[in-house]
Length: 158
Image (cartoon, rainbow, N blue to C red; front, side, top):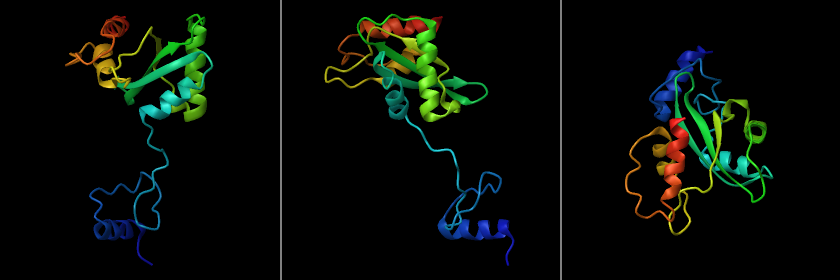
């Protein structure tokens, strides 16, 4: 019986995998390392956030984090009549962590009046991320409400 590492290397060459890390996980039938953590995009985080009864809509962005590499920040628009407080923000974060796992608990849940959207209604995550990090948001001429960017910039400076 061949050594496990030799088998991984041989199968990696056959299947065209360029990097082999036998410590990452088990080898599946195809000789590829099985990674147990699924990929999660902004849509999954936003769906978990809007699952909270107080959240009308949400946008998730990734920001640099010195330990994790990247951390999640959620911008939430609350339903009419709901008041913002630290307990509500913690509850929204707990709901996301409950649905997606504790490693995906947001670094921050920020409440905003409106999200930057195009006139057709598409949320502009790149503009949100740039504004939050204090970077140049680029061309924002297609935004429906350009004032929403200023509110996010103010949150990022805190």
